[in-house]
Amino acid sequence: MDTFRTARDEDFLRLDHQICFSLHAATRAFNGVYRTALKDLGLTYPQYLVMLVLWEHGELPVKRIGEHLRLDSGTLSPLLKRLEAAGYVERRRSAEDERSVTVRPTPEGAELRERALGVPRRIAAATGMPLEEVRELRARLNALTTALDAAESADLQEDCVTED
Amino acid sequence: MDTFRTARDEDFLRLDHQICFSLHAATRAFNGVYRTALKDLGLTYPQYLVMLVLWEHGELPVKRIGEHLRLDSGTLSPLLKRLEAAGYVERRRSAEDERSVTVRPTPEGAELRERALGVPRRIAAATGMPLEEVRELRARLNALTTALDAAESADLQEDCVTED
DNA sequence: CACTATTTAGTTGCGCACAACTGAATGGCC
DNA sequence: GGCCATTCAGTTGTGCGCAACTAAATAGTG
Image 1: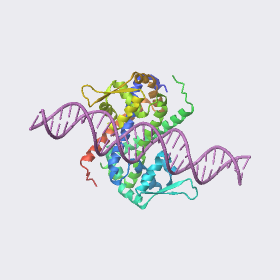
Image 2: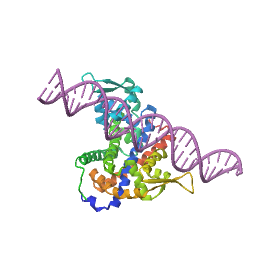
Image 3: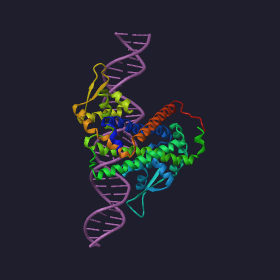
Image 4: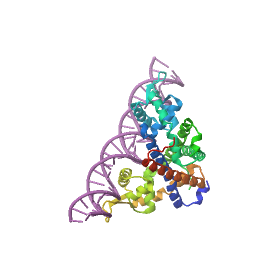
């Protein structure tokens, strides 16, 4: 905590600019590369993420997909509808729990996986980083996400930090 | 390049899942923390980025803001309109170049800066990282963005990579 | 000067992200 | 059984991000 007192607020405001922007920009740069890589498959980047989850798990309720990808039904419902319209997934109400909707790849969706096999290598090449470095960056980002989520939920409860 | 041949495509598809998702999730986690931190100021995260740039440079044409933030007019025009409606910025056509629109903070926008001074520290605390580590992460992300941008523009020109 | 290409904001359309809500199904409790 | 809270998916509304386009102003060229 003491580290945060050494710099003045003004400096913080500028440094902050650089950090939040860097993450923002990197995400969008990634998005751009994926966009071109996925164009042939007719997938957007978030749709690709959903397909990755489905390819790995075979068949999942919407809720589970959302847990894997940190997305809620407000985002997933229309996205899955589009994937269904494209013929890549199937949705049907669960028999044992009528609230739940189970999603799974259609044969075309499964076939799409073969065509997507080349994408990750293309992305990895685009990063210009050795695998080890990418792996380390991923670990850092995961830790960051965990910390941010924890801080936010703590923030929401005791809204006063009382540290001026 | 040879590093990319050692792993099988299947493994790549999973590893890739983890990496792209990690960045995606970290960005959204950041977004969430900023959302709560900026709620009192009535700013969204991208609006905050624009204000940071304006606070730093005082007055800028839309084009320059876009260069700083890697955003085009399609994103900035409506965003700036909202900032103007909120009373934080002023827009007016440049005298010497009627194509250009100059944006600058209003007195209220300048005053907002004082109230925003505490935000970065709050974010820094939420990351749970020492400043040095954050700085390093920022450098990595910037390098990544540069590499990705370069790879993409290269991709668009010679669409065939010929490396199978 | 006239004509064309470029630059600059802005608009439109689509998809994602999320908050807030609806409605149906389920589970717990009396 | 009847009642209420919870859990799901879906809808609505707002804002961002970007591609593709329009319209106006400017720069460059013959």
